[in-house]
Image (cartoon, rainbow, N blue to C red):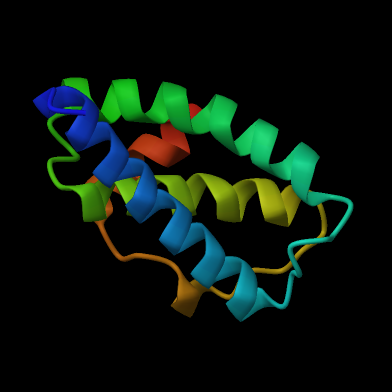
Length: 105
């Protein structure tokens, strides 16, 4: 990958994976949990919509902010699957929170 766009996306997804691993670990979900496949698929579907909307609104600029956007989507899906995510584990970014709230309306 010499292509700058490919490199950028690799960095973004590396950050997303890191933040996902961290959140799952902190809420006590192991990688072998049978719910994870369904949770990840649903999270990805919502994250893709959220990323497009956030990009249009200028709400995400860095890999870290994109990772935060993913984590907020993941937390919503986890909660919908009866896996509690304490609020203090979630990123505090009003613009990103607004985008996620809009996607999950």
